[in-house]
Length: 270
Length: 353
Image (cartoon, rainbow over all chains, first blue to last red; front, side, top):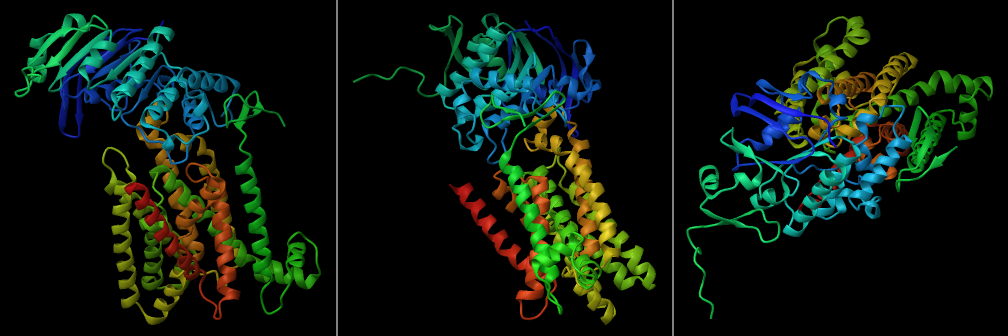
């Protein structure tokens, strides 16, 4: 099980003079899948970037096992915490195996660029994501779903207890979104990793998360398990969305059915 | 030699504290380029009023041959080719660093205006500097270094928006390049005619009359800065994945980028000092090297060797194959221009596919 703990303490996040998030305080449950949800521009990706120490908070701090993450050596952090940015791009011609091997970077040095440990971990990561067959193919020639699996393999090879994923399903069709999230679920169930991700699709977020953090206009509105949290009121308050919340016949979790202005009554079948 | 392969395409070489990925193609390319550079140097050195065959030149370089050949090769002709070799290697490596960090083939010091900045600095000293001693031995190199560094810092700061993005950097670099060329032309117009003439030959990139006094500082600079750059290849390979990913992998992105880019700018400025802003080598050499070695992104050592081969080869073309002897920079520009067009057309096709 994951033994590392992340907490955010009164974070204020800004790009230049523009404050995007304010007063973020929360605890990420260890060994679970946490998803940050909220409308566009609510600051959820910014929050994830701050947790990954890619963005320095204007005030407040992110604590990793009780220590301010910005005060730790970035290389040491990289052994505990991995991050997959939103739609990353690989250099043209880089093979899957070479990309996944870059995940070993924090464990390597100039002289030790490819140890037997590196080999074993990269091999394991390729197997887990089903990418061995494609190991020698250039990443830029793969389909969207395969490409995302390759990047997740890289993050896996980093061997970190905590894995942050910024919209890992962007630009994927529904079948591949489910495939990627199944893989995420496997990491958490089989390997006991802590996963924190940002997702746009609310139903998939509910389906695959143990814990939700709901954000709106740069603040955390509420957090908790999807079963308790997801109600028609919350969706109206946070997203401005009229909806019915039913029980998902597949997972037994809440399922959101949006109500628009038009097409909100069953059409007559002829 | 022990290699094992667990991960396809990544055989492991070495053991214990020293382990590398065994990349036979890259090693073969480096060795082949080294041989090619040596042969081109021999070919180039052999040409002149007293022709010497390639094997004899090679013999003389390696310590054999008669006294006359030894004298002609070592004292008269070799310095020119060695300066060409060093300058080509420096430009090649400098371009490879910029192109890797920005992940954009168009972001090389010659297209971004860094060599133009070094050139403008040097021309300023040639045109406005009064004393000959100050002007040539200390003033020109120092001004070229300062001009190159200043330009590098300026375009980096102008292009900085929460990080460096290749395309924005290229656009700003193209504009800065234009401004610096205009500035240089202005200085040439208002300068004394003989100063302007001297500056023009130099601005075209020329190896004429280079001696060991030019080669030595170039060799020292290339050795020192090249070592820093080669030592950073491990960080560079992570930087190629983009700023965020590199940072997530534990790389101190800004520090590594700054070290590499300063090394790259100093290399380019050193080359400009030794032989003028020889056009397009920094842009073309890394792109040729990565195509031969089939690596993702330009390999540093192979780019340096390709640059050396291109400059020495172009010097041979400029001196021997063309009816009148031209500055080497005109030949490299004639090769580089079409290559730039090819690359832009190809990039457009890729994007619109």
